[in-house]
Image 1 (cartoon, helix red, strand yellow):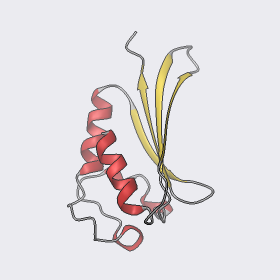
Image 2 (tube, helix red, strand yellow):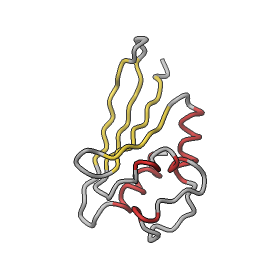
Image 3 (cartoon, helix red, strand yellow):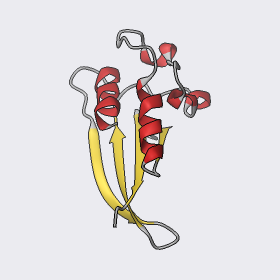
Image 4 (cartoon, helix red, strand yellow):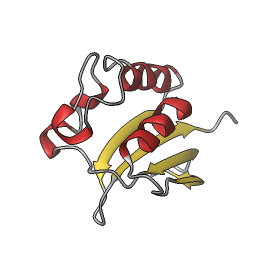
Length: 110
């Protein structure tokens, strides 16, 4: 999952752009600890109406993210399936200062 999201972030950021990856623990409303991974790129982001569908099989955001990356649009769909199998969530949003922010939440194993 991380390799796929990081590869996408690198491909869609400008040359010399920075990718920010953070890992934190958070407590949810029920008092359970979970792990949160956030990956922020410096790319063009994704049209708002496609933020959910980028995790569907065969979806590519060609207008915003170009075809130069190859692939057929399965990476994020596989990532979402893997995260769900671990009882977690993955979501994407456009960052207020530009770029795409992907957030992965996983429950603690303890």
